[in-house]
Image (cartoon, rainbow, N blue to C red; front, top):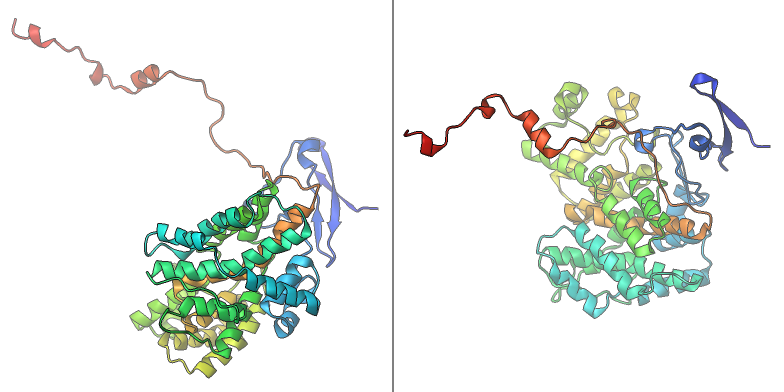
Length: 450
């Protein structure tokens, strides 16, 4: 028998709300009949306490610092899986067999190149157009090439278009970067794996081949893997919102790209580097900057620390910290900004002010450092986030697509505008606003000389 919570409303009215329990013990109150039964709705600005769906993809326990994809701890996945295996896990629900892993890898290789006439679309953007604006537009345009009929008719076709999206999003992102700096677009190579191919398309030139190091490939693979899904964040919720209207997969993930573009979401790691740039340019000592952070009246914020969901150390940050330390040590990079970042990290991990407020370095702090060390320009940070998040968006779109009882998302609101007003004609509104002086009698010009 389902447990029920009783809600006492004004006037003695009662509401009975079924209790929904998730597989990890999370409890929720089902309010789907609250308005029809009582006339009330709930108000939760920012959806902080609202569950918008049931999902079997990702589990987060922010208090304990737990992140799992399809039941597997992120630490195990990071240790044993590539980004592509992780994508298959998220989308299908299970780890792939060796045969399925190879088949999917071959599918990605086959679909890595853009159609030749599609490549011409990049010339329609002005030089210095932001890569995210190009990325969202090109994903929408790609639908016309991959799925002209809009609908996906069977499982084989779903995996074909999913593979095309996951493969081509990196090709589009690299081409968007090349287009934004006025360089020639680089073709993918069939002999390179996923991450190496992306770095090749980003940094190679027609007259000079870029060969990524093993350290760079490993760090970027981990970056993609750790960003592959993260429950119902802004961009993922946007994908589900658009998908609930039965929009096609390409339109839905393109909307996710647009949502991710926001500086409070996908732009957080860029904010970290911008903070480090300011510290470097101003020559402000880290100790002085930290003192200003403690002073709330200064208005200065510490970027890349703390997280809305995690009240403990972000498990992704733990993994990226090690990768960051290894990368910087092996690449022997000398960048003053990275030195400043390590000083900030040291202070935050041991200073009572930050520890007591659980302001630990988050995934954006270390990812910003890693991408900078790899030579990725700041304007591309969010585009790389989108590459990593693509499998999670596809998995969430599929949950909506497979749910034959799914309803179109339609949040309610509490209206706070003017109450009903009587209509007044424009003539009377203008007369009411005129001053007495404006109504004075005016003598016609022809009578003034009489």
